[in-house]
Image (cartoon, rainbow, N blue to C red; front, side, top):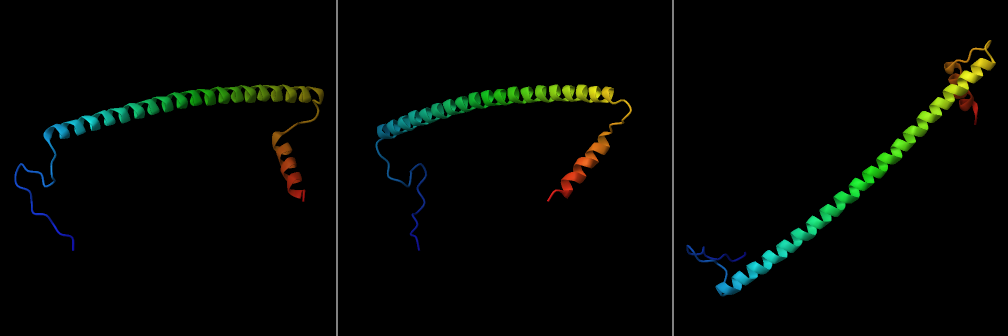
Length: 110
């Protein structure tokens, strides 16, 4: 069993105390240490926020570029479909029929 200390009298600490000047110096040292930690954490948070903002901006630019390319491809595909339909007006080109042909041909490939 762990021995217990008797409760401290009012106003007295159960732990031995050093001189009051030494305690104040220790508290000042801790306060400076705490301030340094806060300063370093603040720098870290600032650098992390700056990095995340630049990364988000870069990702947004790349996604916008991909979106522009997709729109350009869609426009080119529409033009090519129109040209194909104008060269063969007697044939009907159905998207559903072409999709069924591609899915059925991919299922038969071993």
